Length: 179
Image 1 (cartoon, one colour):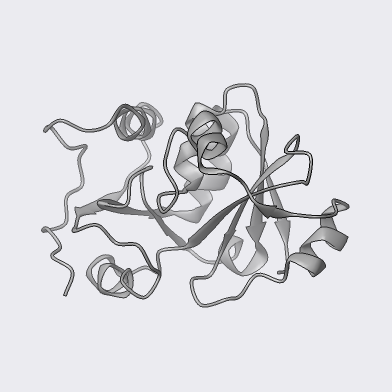
Image 2 (image 1 turned 30 degrees about the vertical axis):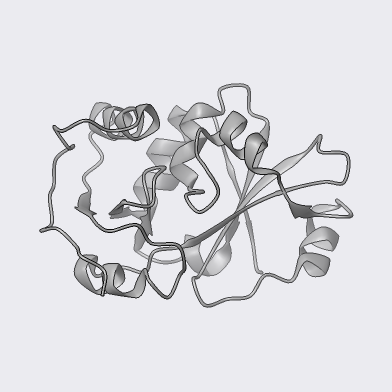
């Protein structure tokens, strides 16, 4: 059983990793309302189901991919239970030979380690190396759930705030695709 804190509506005041601090500073600066919980380390989407219940939102699956030459990077965000068909994705975005990006490149571009990939990590991608691919089903939902760059905390916000405030502020755009 995953231990989960009470729900908070403000940034944490205890010591956090730099990425997590930057995420909350950005959300607060943009006046984006959110709810958050702290939790035990979760490494699978199944472990996130208890967090889903606590926050009242599904935590989304985030997958960091790259092309064969490791020159193009993609963060794919989709429903937790949906399987990614890389062949279909390759056709839709016009990139062949997609595979999981190495952990060191995830750290370089998203500021986080494998198991903690999140759309929030794009605050680190100031040079726009990573293209965000958002499943249409996720984009159409009222609420969005993710981690703030570390899998010991999770948050809930309005999807519209993600798409219309957060992403434009960090100079990123979501390519919305039916996966």
